Amino acid sequence: MSKKWSKKIKNWMTSRMELPADIMMDLPRVTMVGNLHIYIENHKGLLVFKDNELRLLLKQGQLLIKGKSFVLKTILPEEILLEGYIEEVLYLNE
Image (cartoon, rainbow, N blue to C red):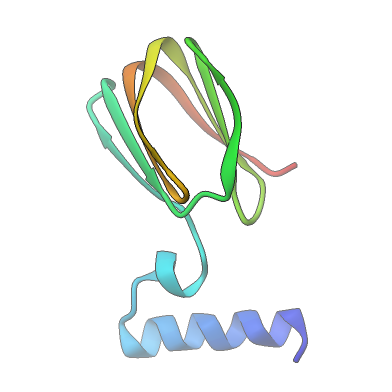
């Protein structure tokens, strides 16, 4: 089955069956509480962690978070809870 056809089927199933898009399409789920906490589910790995930057690998591209005083409160195979002062959240298509 071609990649394009597979994507069309997933989109159709998601809309018709009212399934969460993040699960069906292997997308990250990002939940922020103000600019102090960010919880990311369904990432593919930690690439960079500094006190002012976090970079995660996604199925397609990367997620870059910039700020200050970062602390990883939870790190699991597909989930991360980051605390600190969050200034930017960017999707990178690299």
